[in-house]
Image (cartoon, rainbow over all chains, first blue to last red; front, side):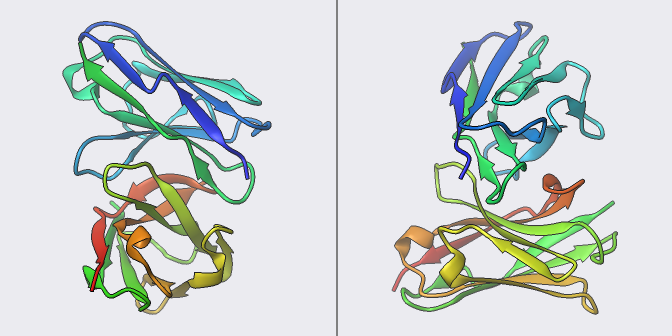
Length: 107
Length: 116
């Protein structure tokens, strides 16, 4: 099973700041990595798939990069609605696995 | 617009079988990976398994207890999880896999509590 680790666990920032979230895999997942945003009481929302492709309707301030074992989600300028938990997920190997999440909260 | 809606009991007794159904509307169930994912209260996401063109894949940690099936005539797919314990208490989501297992559409989730 591929294990994903995310860092930091919590990121405290202010609106307008840049957020950089990291996801690392225990073995290569090629580019088969997705990012999700989850707000309290809601289902996760797909942001990025295949490492760098924005999902439909996702604002351009969200971008993804990386390949192999190291990936980054960047939010260029935080909007109030971006404060949430972010998960990475790999689909390279069965079983599908998710990272433990990074919480982006308001400083 | 694709919509997914979970349905099933919100309370299951220990050792019994948890059964949920996901109804898909606004799109065909004859393609894509249809998956179940769960989230214990206050914790992260755990993939349970999926079905695509009749072929299933399950999380090895749950494989001995899980069955996922599809009823294309009703545009539904289902989850059965046997011999449940309190550790199976979670919000259960159904989701559609886009280009494999990128989950672009989700149900709103249903909380299933395992308790006597």
